[in-house]
Length: 358
Image (tube, helix red, strand yellow):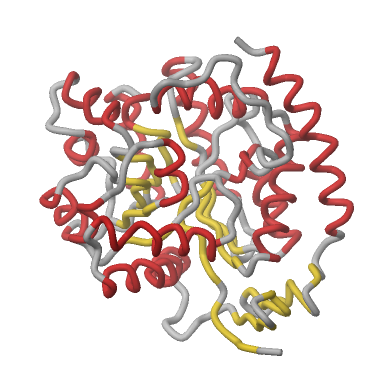
């Protein structure tokens, strides 16, 4: 029997709203042929089908399973176009109930309802940022991705950040489609577009960066921005490996909606990185950098850490801050059986609504 102690893992980019996906989400009727079609036929249909009940079930399920996997912090990026107002409170309540530290935001987009939809998304970011008082839960401003919003929305996001003293969380250069869109609009790329429109305050979080080059990555580092690599998602979506991220030490790991089992994300990185030219020191830094991101975002002291204990590779206990969340391998902040049952019930209803969408 081997026992060990350590520091809890952090997930620096995810989508809690996808928490029910492992519970039988039906495949699209027509197989996607590229990244944008994957979004349109899978994930954008899922987020459109969400209501309050399914979102709550997804949040409690995702958070509970994350804690049982030794993950103490989630940096979430949320979308639920038919359930915008109050959606961040649903996520925050689940995190607060179960003891998860979280940075929450709503990814403003124009892909369904144009500028009005984007304004509602930014308004939800503002409302939550200004009213949330839950310890260990913070808010930020967010955009889905630049190719789903206008210049006006990007400017408004930047203005909101300056007003609130907030950062932006955004998908960036995940696929060539994001780059092509920015070029069509007259910019050198999506990174340059966000910079020129004043929407990247220091400390902002850029998810993916697959299509960034060496010079762009260096620019993000000089600007004090964080990049988040998502190995399992990038491989699953066939968008490629972000080789240029090696030119910044401000690169952390996320799951992009995959379960927050960070050991699986680390394994995916370790499997692929050597064949992509990433040096061992670069990979090691990337695995641990998330703790620096979290301390920066939550203004935690340098010595702060969430303690874990393991036995033969299984989590025995974990504390998030001063709160015990796992004891003897069991969740102590919630009834895991009822959480899983609620998730299964709501998942079945969610899949029915998805299948009714065009």
